[in-house]
Length: 215
Image 1: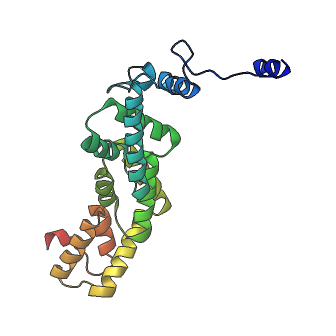
Image 2: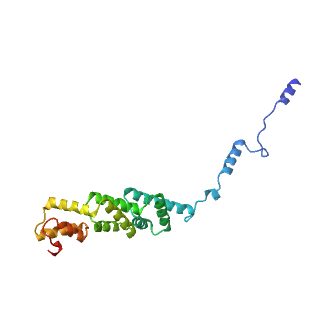
Image 3: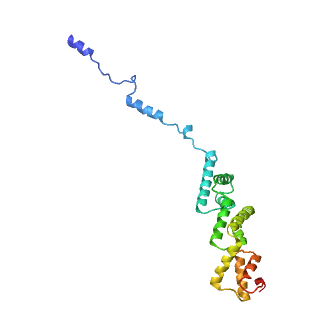
């Protein structure tokens, strides 16, 4: 009887039947299947073209292109605007980028004109008319050009520049004596942009008086 009580007291494993719960590994697989994201869930949605983030991306591209251009050389506002329009098209985002660059000090027409004028009069003896044409080629406004010219020739007077130009010409060609040589000297100084009256006054100091333009 003791032996029987011992046997009946043991827990006996029973075979799995249809009524029993599914094995644990099957439940884990089902759990993993249930955790897979629904492909139609809003979490998987992708932004459509034309949304605000794409506009911001376009502005960043325009701004990066503008900064890269300004890093390689100086541009006036009109020059930079034309360059960006040629690359991206005529977009209102370009206006915002130009405004930002001006606010940050990266784009300044007055600074460009003044630094260019100071550099040119420092390395080459040129007159006001020649320098004005070069600045106009940078698509600067008349007001900005006139202001830069006044500052440049206040620092280095045009009379001093023409003296340097004449000295250089005399060193290479000699003092002009004949009417033909005087005419060449006059044309040389005129191409450098010096005014007619200033050229005539300076050339009178080189030899016989006379108007070289009449030779």
